[in-house]
Image (cartoon, rainbow, N blue to C red; front, side, top):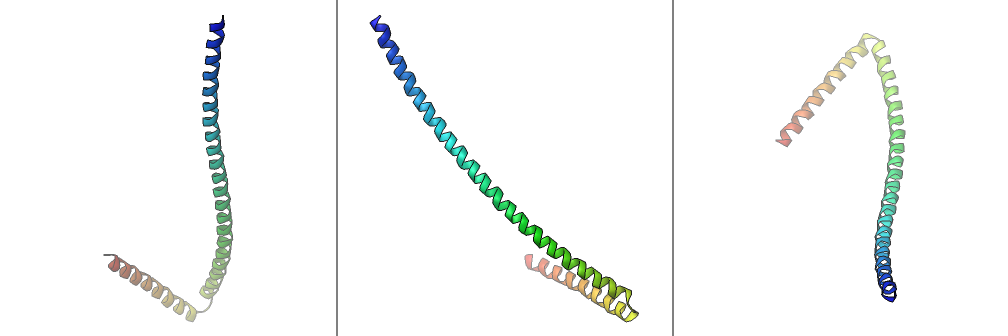
Length: 109
């Protein structure tokens, strides 16, 4: 009977040591998960603030473009002299665009 109790005590000690090891492993995994959750939360907050900033930038750009379109429409509706100027400016902008495209293409090759 005494051998049974001693053997049982050794098994209990071994199981206790294994439980402590598993508890330590679980605690380290929980701390890693906590750290990851904190990092994800921090990144989500940063991305949300970035998106809010972009929203305000897009709203200001929309206001600027709508004002430009109104002025452009007013110029188109006005007399023939403005239409000639508008045509020259449009052709000039297209030529500048193609010139810049050509120069950038040449510099890359």
